[in-house]
Image 1 (cartoon, rainbow, N blue to C red):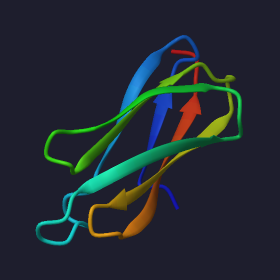
Image 2 (image 1 turned 45 degrees about the vertical axis):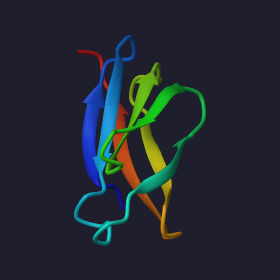
Image 3 (image 1 turned 180 degrees about the vertical axis):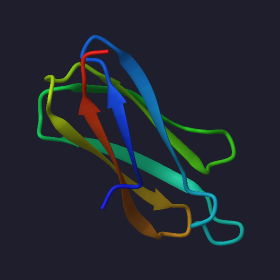
Amino acid sequence: MSLFYAQKDPDAKLDYSIDWTLWLATGDTVDTSSWAVSPTGPTLTDGTIDMAGAVTTIWFDGGTVGTKYVLTNHITTVEGREDDRSITVKITER
């Protein structure tokens, strides 16, 4: 299940973020973050973790009109917790 649903033009390059603040245990922060897209094809670049260690961001470029892509973020925290969250993005001419 996706965290949220968005629409994007195929020519747009946009950033998408997940805020892990409410999920993180007190004093824990995101240590590593990796992103995957399904189905494959579009480009994911410049993944970041904010300075507070709670928000992960990825840039999404491309896509085929009418296709729904699921961007999945896998994180590991400093304390060793791991989890995934997903964002569904439908490509629509705008």
